[in-house]
Image 1 (cartoon, rainbow, N blue to C red):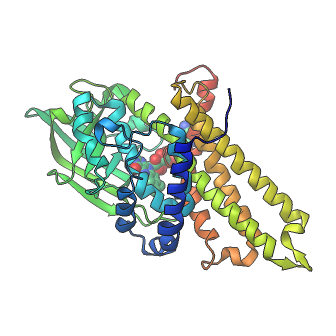
Image 2: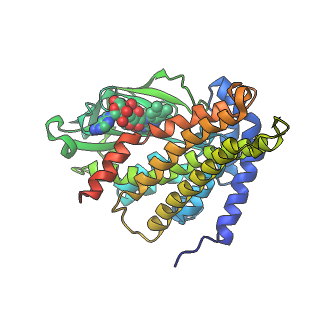
Image 3: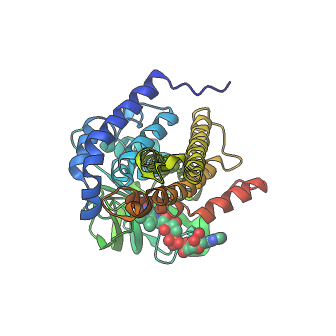
Length: 387
Ligand SMILES: Cc1cc2nc3c(=O)[nH]c(=O)nc-3n(C[C@H](O)[C@H](O)[C@H](O)COP(=O)(O)OP(=O)(O)OC[C@H]3O[C@@H](n4cnc5c(N)ncnc54)[C@H](O)[C@@H]3O)c2cc1C
């Protein structure tokens, strides 16, 4: 049965997230974009309202909302407010997904509850990418060598969201460089661990409220109990599962940007008069808006379908998670470009929010697997491969 009517719980979260985005995020979105600074005040307010923890299981102190469509609705609404700030509010989910996918029960009990404390917010970072290992994850060169009942980690991670400011870093390293995927392991490195430091803070095109930095590991020792999954565990499958799992939520944020741009362009086109009529009445603009609206609706359908599949634990055999993320990322860029076109010269100016939305949208074709890598995943699945 297909049913697009939202449940009471979904509607309640949609209202909560939308109100928060409207009252707390939109008024400061341009400011944090300009300042290029993590919006701690906004994120702490979001935490108090349960928006950073609603999706964690109750047994860890989270809100216990298991429905992934609710998660995607919240992502869409918050990113409608500002995708950079949405990343700050929900970005910890990626590190948490790594712990939940790879960690033992004891590790989950130890590390997940801190992300659920609404009054003492803790954030996470997921450290996979390296200067010479982006899409090609298995060529990563950060090493973890057994020493004194633990591991000595050495290497550099780059472009890490919350990197160096997070309370918990989930760090992927190789225990055997010759083994490729087979040597991949993941470690918890808490804030303040000797040998871990923040490198260069990046200054970005978009999502500028989110913090992105290098994280450097120099003889950074962690106890063996911090190896996710325990001694000898291979993290490769968990890493892929983690990315598969989080992709539709990333798509939902791209969708939020696209919807913001579409709504703004419609309002503008209804009031801007040229040649004695509102520009929406010129077919060239009206048709453009129609195409933008179709793309937004289609992206939401892919995202919600992936959410429904996650809910019923159906595997993404056709790469449905990648499809949702890929399509939403692509259309977000297209819709923002069209929205600027509809605003004409005003769209190009910083007094109007659309140029920021275009800058923010571009990252969704790059992070958590580029658009090309999503197409690779989908085509491999169509060819019968599991990844
Ligand atoms: C703002 C920001 C935040 C990020 N946050 C995190 C984070 O929190 N944690 C983390 O680990 N990483 C993070 N990343 C890293 C991000 O996931 C990588 O940038 C991304 O995976 C691409 O890697 P790369 O930049 O090295 O590009 P490359 O892998 O070098 O790719 C360059 C180009 O080649 C293409 N390409 C590569 N291989 C193929 C192929 N086989 N077929 C076709 N085309 C190919 C790519 O699609 C791309 O267009 C972040 C990046 C940014 C910009």
